Image (cartoon, rainbow, N blue to C red):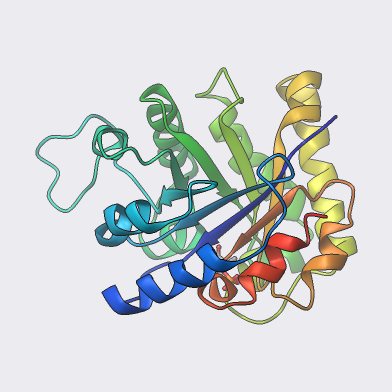
Length: 249
Ligand code: PEP
């Protein structure tokens, strides 16, 4: 199958100029497996994207944390996909649960965003995941399938999509999914894609896990057959992000 391990670092709304430079220095000095083994993408806030891009080692890449759903124009406060392309930013994170929950981004809106970003040439880390309430009600698979369906409805080519399974109850809580819980949902997502998109996409699309991944728990999670990498929040701001990258091997 040959799905290359993928590690994304979501810095969220954190950092000063000085702190950002410090994180980049740590990453630049790190000894990690080569680009043929692991793809590393870090996602600073918009305002630091040009700085990080200019300082970051060439084998690591940058992602924006969001972009507008359509062509730019009179949308105060938004950043368009065209602008990211213009700056040479190759990746964007879309559908993060913080945006779904705090900014009421619906499944359909996220699907539209993914389709538009892809149409402009961006690569997309598309996030799905259930709340604790939904998990306890036994609807985890139905929820992530519905979120994935809204993306599949708008997209015909999955080559530039990485799907991030991020249970909301595990994000920033220190409560990580067990390797078995992560594997179960990843396998179900792959099954859904097999039935509803194609066998080819199901075997090639990378499904990464996010939710309180750290240097101590990454290795066991990485050993699961359907876990193709991680999207890391809190720990991506710390030196242990390097250990998470190394869990690729
Ligand atoms: C995230 O925000 O994508 C995330 C996974 O956060 P954390 O690792 O802090 O749980």
